[in-house]
Length: 58
Image 1 (cartoon, helix red, strand yellow):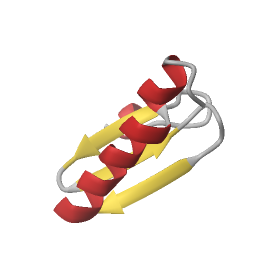
Image 2: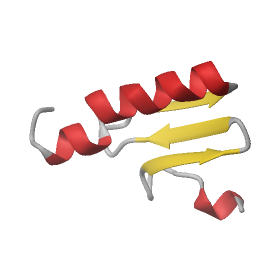
Image 3: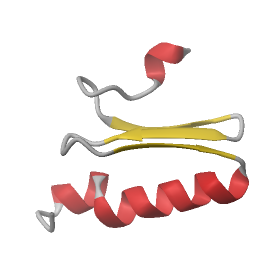
């Protein structure tokens, strides 16, 4: 299922089995492992990338 993980050509957020990866079209990327890190990555993505970019805030 590695084809579901985001890449610079296909930005997005992926979460699975206690891991997460995010790649934004602005060039930012991050990975996380464990519940606390995954939660923080998702919160950061929502606040600063994916939806935030769509709203034109960044």
